[in-house]
Length: 149
Image 1 (cartoon, rainbow, N blue to C red):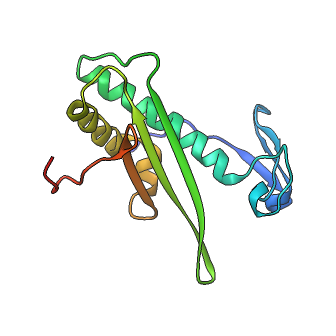
Image 2 (cartoon, rainbow, N blue to C red):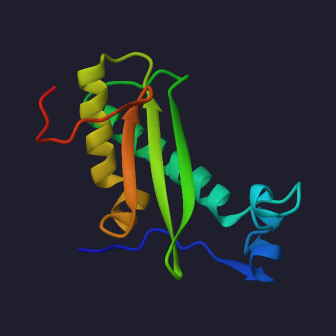
C-alpha cells in the first residue's frame, strides 16, 4: 500500500539560465547551462543537482541495507554519482554512474549491498527503465547477476 511520506516543492524561472528556489528557501540558486557548454561560472545546473540528490539518496539506501543486515557503514563510505546529459537525435537524455566505496566490506559483500540498495533507493526506482544507471564498486563495474564473478 502506497503511503506518501514527504513532498518537496521548488520552482524555476528562466530555464537553464534562470533561478531555482525550494519552498523552504534552503535551495536558492542561479542556474546555467553547464560551463563546458557555454554557461556561466558560479551557477549550478539540473544535472549537478540530480547527481547530488541521487548520491545522497543512494547512500541512505545503503545505510538502510546495512542496518537490516546487522551491519554498520564506515563513516568514510562514499557514493560518487556522475550524471551525463546527452543528445540522441532531437531528444536529450540522462545517464548516471554510481560508484560506491564502503571501505569496510569485501568486494562480494559490497556488491550485494549495492545491488540491494539499487532495488530500494527512490532515485533508482524512479529512473528504472527510463535511464541507464551503471553501478560500480571502487571504479569497477558491478557484474550483472547473470555474469560470473
